[in-house]
Image (cartoon, rainbow, N blue to C red; front, side):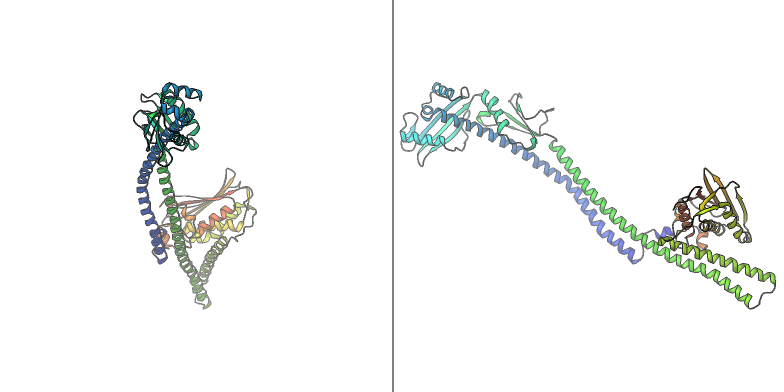
Length: 515
């Protein structure tokens, strides 16, 4: 039979080559894409890092803009409360008194209104009723903020088409802008979904004015120095609450890498399974072909001998009665060999189809061993083997299928006969140990390498040895032995070394056999 190790190599038939090409066509592009993906992940992470930093910087920019708008909105409300005429007069004491009357005492260091009219020039005092009315309308209207001169904030005012143009100039007191206005904005107007950001505001000297959440360390992602007149010099700091930008980017990069690796692993595993299954099917197909060839040869040999000696006897060409008895023994031996081979094939077929049935009944295991030995004693001794049999007297009964157990023993004895070279010895022993019945068949033949001692119980498998391949066999005997023992709730074990013989042991439970 062909060498199974050679069969496990890359398939050489068209179907195997097709599978190899398919696996390569799928796997190689996927590996290339994976390499490109792994190369692209750091680039993507760097781009994401830049984007997150820009997003954080934009957030600080929007916070500064919103604070400036809040300051101008407060100034506009104060201007409405004080009144246009008083603001135009520009008397600080009067404006502060008016602010106190509307509940805004101590808020502003400066609050004045400058106005001009295209028709009459600049007006600071004594403006006409029409111009004053337009200026009041401008103060009451919606105003777009514009940057004012250094030290002041400013709001542009326009009254009607071609009417009065004005500028409301103001400057908050430091205590109000930094202590009240800043806190009101963050506590009522600041939008921070899921509290993802932590914002800190500090004085130029580092003193913390406000913080949206406690910060164990002073590590922030980005910072911005405010330039608006009301908050000039204050520093805004931002960090992510749970993870830093670096940690977030690294986490995402690792997740992408793991995902790519997992997809590659699944793809590789799938291709490996497909490839190995096809190789296995091809191997089994080859083994079955070899099995048919070997079985055909094994059938032909005993049939040819039976036919030869039968024809010799029929034609009366036997010189003596002793010779005739010898021919009859040969015919009987070859017919038993033929029967055993056919039984193995039929049993294997039933096992493959799930129809193998066992008839368990209490039986004397020692008697079964004696019957097998007596049936095979003559062919064993005829081939020059020395036979020793030890059957313990205290063997208990066990529930077994007599025919199946006999078949398992016969297969082991046949193997011992076939695979012995110079030293021809067979030892059969039956004993009880630890509540189990052990049936051993020992020989001093070619032995089995340790690496192959599990494989020999697989169907069609034959060990790699020159004598094994010179000796024809079906590769089913030991597979049937294992199946028979498992059906009995037991097992089969082997102790062997190459060139030192083998000992096969059938282990039977004393109790009830497995259904």
